[in-house]
Image (cartoon, rainbow, N blue to C red; front, side):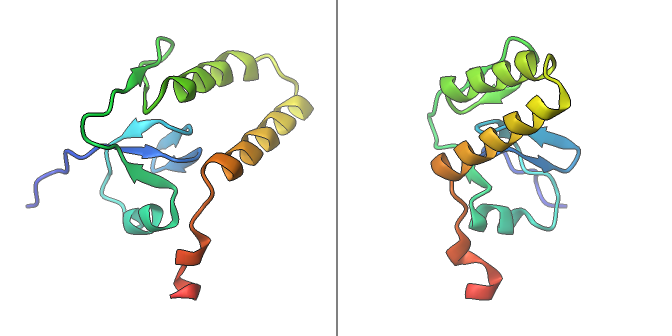
Length: 114
C-alpha cells in the first residue's frame, strides 16, 4: 500500500473536490481521485510552496494560502447567506470573473492540445 502524500495543495479557483467545496486559495491534501493529475495540469490546483505561511479561517477552521483568500472565504460565508437568489447569482458570476483574472486555467494543456 502506498504511503499517503503529505504534500499540501491549494485550490487556484473555487470548485468541488470529492465531497469538499473548496474556495480559491483553500489548502487541502489530495484524495485518491483519478483526475488529480488533470487538476494540476489544467491549473485548478497547485502545490503549496515549502515554507509558505498559511492562514486559518476563524469561522470554520479552513486553511488558506494567503490572508486575502482567507478574508474572501469569510466574506463569502457571512455575506452570501443574506443574499436573495438573484444576488447569489451575481455574487457567483463576480467570483468567476475574479477567478478568470487571478487564476486562469491552463487551457493550452488540455488533452485536445497535446
